[in-house]
Image (cartoon, rainbow, N blue to C red; front, side):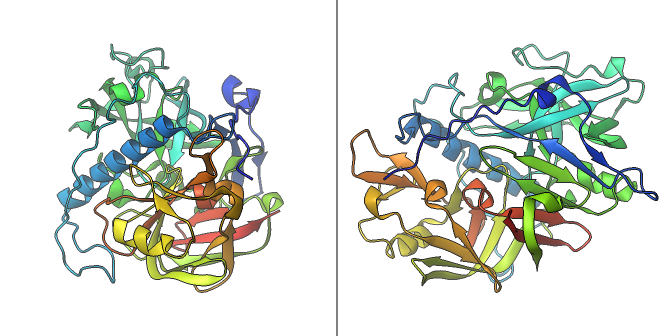
Length: 421
């Protein structure tokens, strides 16, 4: 009737211990592809199958502020009217920073993150980071940070490859706090892929948003134009330095067996061909167009530009697009904070397509749980939010990605999907 609780604490001792990961090699390239196990901390659904409203609000706030920062970066680089088919050469309208509104900042237990192990420096200093296709910078706490809690901290003086760079790094959050630090270049290793002179930020002041989170930092997997550090993101560096056989990486996001594969795709995790779609923006987003949505087999939206973002739990659309979408679901009603409800006993069959196959979103992915225990209404994973990205631009996160094998290709400048095996 409703989505079963999916609080996941996958026992990935490999991830935590830093033991060698499986590496696929060939004769011409030192690394053909690397599997990085991912751990999902938890979801916005409580153990009893009820929607965790506080966790949902935190996700909304995090999403709003993350993409506000992205728009600031794009604006600094002269970007405007950046999606074809939107409002032409419009100026960027930055959304107002959002606050939690009374949600306890210390309670991070219900946030969602797909995290894995990386190392920085020589000798290696180890960290657990979130891999995020919706941003492009690597940042971790600095050893000089006094507000970074119990997180692992980067000490540049202990790395023979560390070099301090000009400039600064800062991200502002809706709770009034910020993360800021100093840029460096250093050796960075993800799995068996090592790049040199990689830009990163050593955070000397960590926001309240991150102080109690279980992850140490974030590794952006977006394209170079989104980099606030004005450096080359890790995977782009790996491609430029010839450290991977293929200029692509891929995600499987699931309750178990989740992984990031760097340097190609893991054929064991999908069947058939990967259906690729070209990136249509030079802003650094993995954005593809010609998107369409159906509800119970009937058209609900079309001519969409979709940003595929592994750092986003939900699917975020403009309020107008949300209203139009939910008109196709009988009994749907607005809740709060952009969330909508629908009858638990009638979960709609929602699917996305980009001119090829139709990719369904499972009922478990769409249904975030009952509004409250015993309620006949459940909360939907497509939410209304003005991110300042423009009309008909949908931000597509884990709600969709958990149902497909997702491939991000620099070589093809495309995003692809395949059926999970």
